[in-house]
Length: 328
Image 1 (spheres, rainbow, N blue to C red):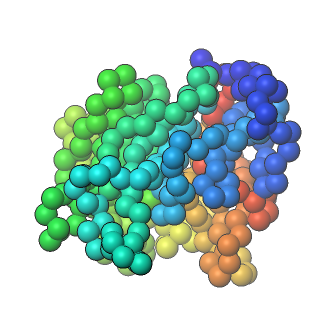
Image 2 (cartoon, rainbow, N blue to C red):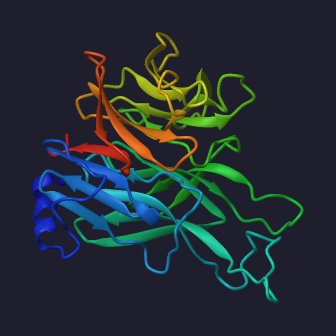
Image 3 (cartoon, helix red, strand yellow):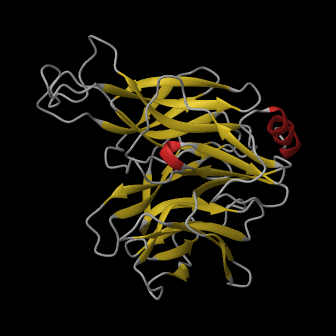
């Protein structure tokens, strides 16, 4: 297993490591994944903070798909844009490629970074790659992707993809053209299901929380909202509802829904943003608050046992992953 002690050793040796970083905090015996400025990825531990290097030749992905931290803390998965290959089917046929308004044409790939090997591997060749999610064993990555098309009359086809890291093969999941590309994806603890957001016309939310059974690919809607995240014990799924103003828990069978935190009473126009992140013991959630008329992010920790909410950082970086030091 990849342990926090290993990361601390890397931190001491790495020139990019530093003990404190503005807008970043740590938790005991834990690794936390943050999204920093300009798409930088930061991994914080009690021993310091590691800046994960960008994939070579990549640019910032401005559409903000969510990266992922593997359960053992040893890998990071993230979407990247790269200059497109000459002769490929054009992903952006409306962009001018000649004259004074010429724009660089980009493609998207899924990148997986090994902290042990300090190296990225890239997978796929798409028009767009969305948010990532590692399977519990760290051997698969689920993500949304827009695939290439030679027919300029139509938009790029969209699908949920599953990447096998052992073979490098990427397989599409049937009937997932409505998956939200920038929303959180989460695996069940037994890797039998995926929870994700699909577009909908529901009044209380821009999306529907959908479970997909691996293999049969059957779909079931269990709630209205976005950014679902499966608890480590498998008994709850956390997500945002009411246009990201409420954090809700629901059982995977669609029963027992309960609101655990409401931002509507907070002055200044705040909503929840990006991932709902569980503590390894399943007793706490890290939640990102975004001010709608500004660019500020606060991170708060919600204790699900006591119901107490504590601010962990103010005007800092967004937290997106939490792994235990033991890797269990």
